[in-house]
Length: 639
Ligand code: BDP
Image (cartoon, rainbow, N blue to C red):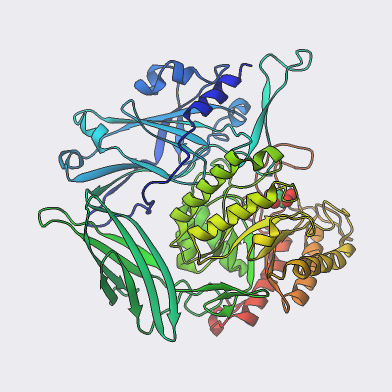
């Protein structure tokens, strides 16, 4: 099989799974750390050779990419798919190659007391990285960062510019997250020689490339490798239990200072682990739950190196808050919290899943306009920069891993589980300190009624709880409540349903009875709080019909209103949230059910509101006024 070779290439480089080493602190500048952002134009070539293996056979990493064939400009960060006019590149499966050259500051190279770290914010899906032709790291999986100390490689050639080469393969297998499979079409009367497609079981375009910034940053050789904080409070005293791991020194003394928003010292401590107590603490509150949401302290950590060596400094934003779940309620800071929010995607015209600041800020403005207090990172971890915005603005997050489309029984085996556990470790390692993150979601709509799902989810969820005993864990189900083998292990039931859409299309009148039955079944059986984690209807913006018909703005409105009636009854009992599917229209694979993408957004892909957005806005501000403590000037519609 022609394409088998490039799968083998992916298989031979696999093996990076295994124990995680080191922390994954977000690279921040400080007096001891510098950051060089390599965003911009890189050279790019997709390997269209039949086996997709020419790059390895001809060692494209050993010189400039432009020396081994034609290259095009490719922006980083961005998906490569929609950048050119070529359908072949949009739908490409296999290895793509990026490289660029840069000068590393001379003082970085001459100072042997510095580590120089190369970090990729995320690349989809399997990545291999070389510096000046020497392999420095491999990573499996999109949506999460990876990094390596490249100081030694760079110092070998201080007078030359530094060349970074990154090969990325978007091939999915039954053991990757998300899973996928390559199908070869062997009938020569129907398909050209070597023809194959990649099958996926998820409903968003499989964008690929370098999706988040590539950075070089420095730290001293004795450096803060990781920090973990756990917060609580008693009366007006905030309690921050911290743990610092310092690398490069066997017994470092650590000094910790907590400063408030105005830069005043709120508490201090010494030692690599300890407890800080903050009097008259400002708690971290969600947006619309308090007049001063998203309050962040800064935890300044300094290991004491030998007098002659530079001292590292890392300042971690910290929000003091608690999360607790009972069988009917979700509490933040001991107050019942109701999720009135959205599901999102990282998705936009041209850049696909590439991090894009104007889009990020626009989306936060829209969330606030809407009165949304939360979102789920459907169906993979979002950029750290987005979570930092959530921390600062008080937007609550259900943090989901890329466990989407697990539908094939072969994706419930040991290899899949082992990889899923590593991905959860990477996710918790990255996001554990974000106050906005209140729950982990280990999967979306897996085939959780299949026999192996019981053991799979039992292990996956208990492992996740061991990684982080302080946050509830869920996965999002659309299985039959009675046959769901994973549900017994979750803290909160998250259910997706599309009444009057995929089932009973056109019959909005069935929504109230079916939704009521859904809630009563799930709560009756599992005695857990429930979030309606998806519901909605496609709308081609601008289509109208009265009485409503599917795909018109009026139909989405009336679907929403019918769901809302039942939410209002059941939120008095045990329903703790509602998340619309979806915040905005987004691109999908082509198919008979999709009109240039999924149109269930309440905003178009270009972020213009459909009429459903106004229904939701009225509702969310009403809910906020009922459940929050808003000062008069923030109340809708004056906001
Ligand atoms: C749900 C999936 C989501 C889809 C949505 C839909 O979780 O990813 O986009 O259906 O069909 O089942 O619109």
